[in-house]
Image (cartoon, rainbow, N blue to C red; front, side, top):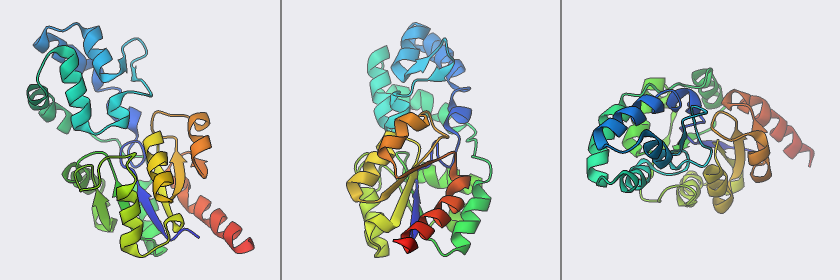
Length: 235
């Protein structure tokens, strides 16, 4: 029986592509002009497919903390990480996060059912708190764990494990809900139950081998929880 939920943020509570794919081309163009580096090279540094107009599934911005992405991109265009961070920081912080429709309602249902909710993200703890505040759900989140909270970044399982441990729950009774393989790996490493959603960059075929369940988005959680509860009672 699932007794707590630990959410990823980007691509899980927010629609990753709706948030970032539209913003990237102008950023790439502007950075190309500022750095003198060809647009294609800048796009490659961020893992963005200019022809398709979308981030590649394996782009660092999808899988790694922001400072790792910035450091790698800076090396590729010949800037220091400090300079690129100063350039891109104000621009990326202004990006409107596109929340998955129905998130506040689902969160309210889960809280009403008595489930503690947490967020485990490769963003910073402060950034995550700001985004959750903008979504109107921060007061329902019992704990926010970022890459800078002392447990490393996913796929490191320590943050996931500590969430369950702090609640005094068996790891398998906590569902980690995420859109990426780093989420699935963190869940597996901590012994949590991995639930994948399709609001990130990966499809069902890529996620299914690594998850106990794949649902379209977080609004499917209540139905999945009810089904999982019935199955646990039947065994």
